[in-house]
Image 1 (cartoon, rainbow, N blue to C red):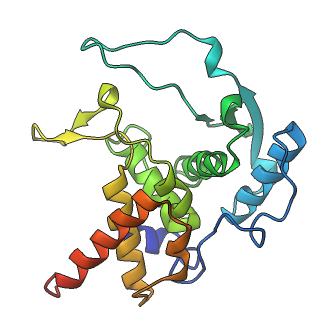
Image 2: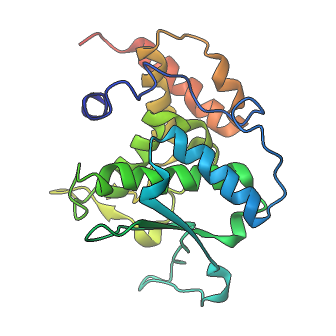
Length: 224
């Protein structure tokens, strides 16, 4: 988070408020149509400080592909979204899976995650081959305001794509898990000097329980 604060000076949750699933943040009517998805994407893109001229939105349909498993027989996840970085001045393509169009709040989280790739990879802040690319992208999305959406719909429990932490045999999720989101949000609440943040009521019951547990744990920690 210290690294994110330096990289995104003035854009993080210490300086700005959370984006929440409310009419205040998303005032446009939503019916799942391409036009509604575009309006939603533009709202997220503007908050993520990604210029419209830099990205192009495209739709994919992962339901048409085969269901795959790994060597252990674990189901492989399908992609909710894809970031395809442009080269030689070309625009980045953000692809969104059509199956999410009837779940706009999940869709917001996917949009924000893919646009975080643009902020990290598209702006050459990190190497795309680093082992924790997706984990850092999730944390960046939280830092830039969209943590409630990701915490309400985490993608971190896919054992089929889990690796190990470097130099250990400890399991490393590809994406942040529910407890990771709870801890990250608790740390952000601490940085904002919030003991009972109003934004936490927008967390689903399981995400809220993890957040409260992390808040209690953080309160017992010895100061460093």
